[in-house]
Length: 214
Ligand code: G6P
Ligand code: MG
Image (cartoon, rainbow, N blue to C red; front, side):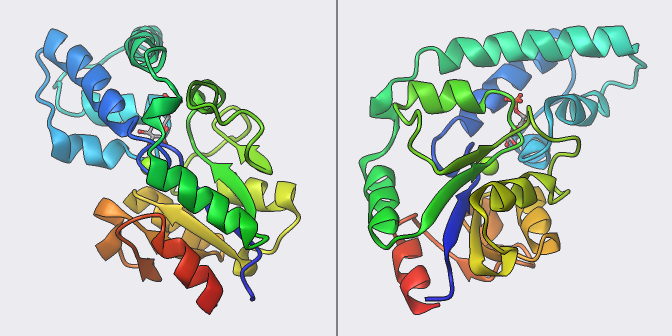
């Protein structure tokens, strides 16, 4: 098999924390009377917290100081973390856990590549501490997706070549990042039709077949 490793995005791929991001941003937007919907939220997938805030503020028609922006980003994160703290290992879907274990039995190295600075907290809440061979996240990078930095870091921590690594993403910015980094790309959800997706998939279990074919 030419694929040696799989790097997973976290929010929207391993778990459904993407809905908590939406609810937290929506709370901020409503308070500031800024229009916000799923379409605007979709542009925030994969991009950093502060860049997401910039997208939200585009609709405000006002200028915010750097200090105000940092306060808003912190407030959003507090709301978001209040959802994360309620998560338990039961929030990890059985099918997801099964697919991860099957890929591991196929001797593939497994990693996380996420722009989120909450990655360690989420993996802990899901009972996945220490499960992955490498974790590259928003605390370790300068540029979030669509820059390939987080995936290249994950590959280098695993000691694998991008061309022998499958990246699994649900966000257009993540697909672009993986493509730019020279990875093989599987896309879920919104990402199935994104140019750059080599393998559109419906569920993580589909990865087992793809990896055994390649
Ligand atoms: C992921 C999510 C984005 C989020 C980013 C930063 O990439 O898809 O929606 O903005 O992480 O998340 P954080 O947990 O650091 O605020
Ligand atoms: Mg995602």
